[in-house]
Image 1: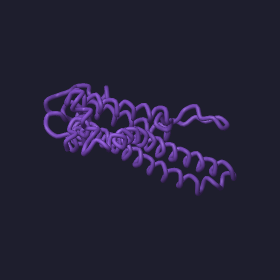
Image 2: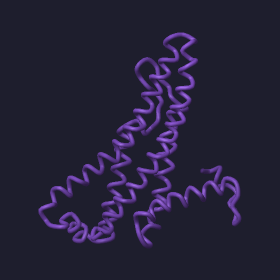
Image 3: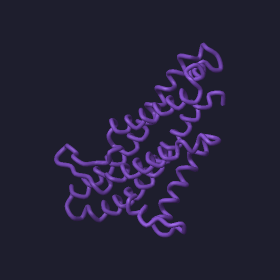
Image 4: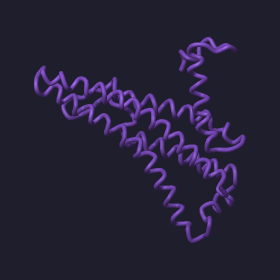
Length: 204
């Protein structure tokens, strides 16, 4: 980001074009769920979350240190503690935004719509939102890295001839993993915007 944001100009070029495209892209995700001027309040969070998750998802493809059965370096998002922490931050931000926008009473009434008997279900839904947001990201990235590890094991397990079929397979899966990592970053930010929208506009 430092390299892309150096030498900013009124007429963007090079790295500044990439940076502005990323900002517009994440702002578009937010505006797709959060209507009106409220969307501008969450653009920076969406941009930061997307960039962090995207880079974290790809790190394990290039930096993977394993000795025996223990992995010392891998994608941060292949760790459930990291992804669940991100999910907790997201859900906490959504609820804080709901209180700030609607007040305590308006926020509490949102859990009793369309009628009060649904309060337990609505509360449980918030817990499942937290779990699914974090575990979806973890599951996809962890599974991808596990498969890469298995392919690497095939390449080194049967001598040099196994590289002939293992290398193309690993390259193909790495390319697919880049795609999956990008999609997961997009999905996380999209769901973040949806959860915030549900809290600040409970009547919708």
